[in-house]
Image 1 (cartoon, one colour):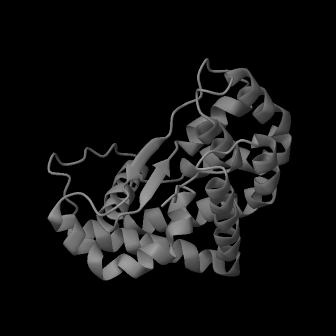
Image 2 (cartoon, one colour):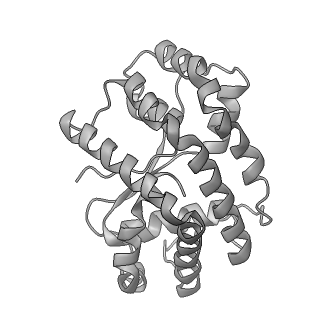
Image 3 (cartoon, one colour):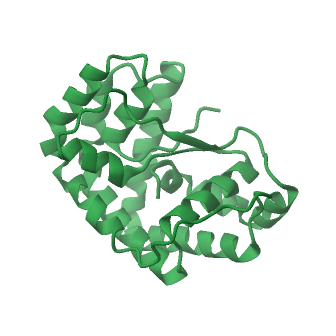
Amino acid sequence: MKKLAIGCGILLVVGLVGAAVATYFVVNRVKSTVAEFAALGEVPAIERRVRNADTFTPPKSGELTEAQVTRYVKVQQQVRALLGSRFDQFQTKYAELSKRMDKDQGTVFDAPAVITAYRDLARTYVDAKKAQVEALNDAKFSLSEYRWVRQQAYAAIGMPVMDFDVSKMIEGVTSGKSPEQPQAPTLGGSIGPTGPETNKTLVAPHKKQLEDNAPLSYFGL
């Protein structure tokens, strides 16, 4: 099962190409196409609209609460509803990426081709981020708590999720910073159900919905 979550075209290249590929190529390729992804430059400012700016400290038990699961599912549904038919773009692009990864045995070798494939997703991603922030505020989620709940929920149903700090990465690229090493993505979820039994019980009623909305989680939404 090679399902991975991705933030956006730029982040996909930085994360999946990995440290084994020359950083010089990755960074400079991203810089050369940043104008084509200009819409993504709005993301950091959009995320700053999240009213709950608290840093979430996960419980040592790793257990979700029923309220967290309910709020998380509600946010997903709200984002999907606000996107409407444009949700199909995430499904389509994810399907394309999955086929490429299956063909290349889980590695994206043709980074420029991936950038091109995701160019038309930039504006939809920004609109999805706006919808997410609105939903997070309605649910009183902070970004850090939401991301943790997302990882725990998908681990409980046995699906991996890869999480990037999208805002931080975009700010770095657009400001001209050239880190010596690409920022590593955070891998959450799992291949096969894992985590506390409490989590598995809490997410079980929402399993199909989480699977149906997986393209959102794959893009860090």
